[in-house]
Length: 501
Image 1: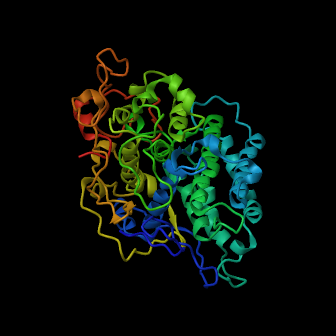
Image 2: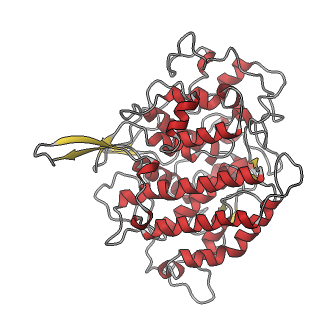
Image 3: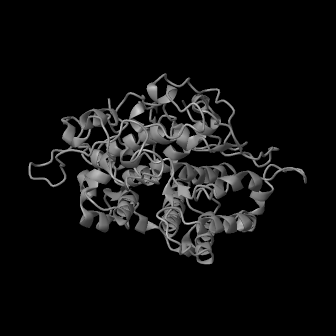
């Protein structure tokens, strides 16, 4: 699938989300739920919304890849490596207006926590005061967006006086970004809603660089470092303040209880460098010089040193903040991934594929996602039919079916493929193979760990073979793997990281 782009660029092979023409009449819609049953996921995978979400992720992902920069300051060409840690964010007054506005919005949303302190009543999960916080956000969202959005966005598409405005369509994505006030939970579906909010703003030209603004690629980077990371900071404070339940969690068999995007963009920050400018594709193996070893995610001191500069380690650090016990026990999938030998480039490639399989192709995650005119349910004319697989075909039959056990799923359909100098990278080309847990006997995709390594567990706790304690929504790995029957080795074989063969 070749993602379309209507913005001028001298690098046509790099995926970029389309920009809408502000001079063309546009009819906005109230976003509506379309995925009501498990089989509805299959048509979703051929929609324009699915295409646009995938394209936007690839666009942001590439912006964080380190660059090889040629410098002639000393008279002779010299190549230097430029990386983009979280600490590289410019001072606030040097940021583009669009980025500063979104950061103010997030600070205002966070400040509402002080107006809705947690209820002192005893409860393990789900403090009811989160509902008050969500109510305050909803009450103030209209004024917040009026302050955020310039007149060009508020009047985008020349709407008639009684027609919906852009603000009416993007508000549900913003309100859906911080968790469910009914269930008092947060998960990757809410994270997806914030990504959709940013994608809508992109299509409305909110981030379009002005004559004195940042370059196009830098804007992409600032969206992640300057907006998405602060959003995750707000979310983590909400989770801790209101003891929010993980939404749709796979328990110990999920990548993370709450988030996925920081693992994509954090691994991109550490990949092998590509040339500045040009259209070199994202590397599918290798790491930038000085990057921590992939297996160091289990070392608390390394995580502490890197969490302030890298999104992957920041997410791992939050896990360490809220969980105790051996890392391999409460986060076996991340432990499994840490054994990949071919560097952060391979992990990044795998994370993109895993997001497609475990977020965009999972009914429990996307069932609440609404569709409007900006992220449309209309079919993408260039979409290929989803490949028939266990993952796509075996979805819960209805919204009341709950979360399917993650080992009942296989490979899913593909996102818009990453683009190289000669077109799309073949879907079966270089990438991470579905790796088995390092202790399960496979050595093709894991780093060698010495016989005295403390990272190698003697065995994994057994888990139940169906939805139940430790596997369904809210388990979040907090209760361990749970008891029950079933072979550990067999479950590891089936619940392998999604990028391998």
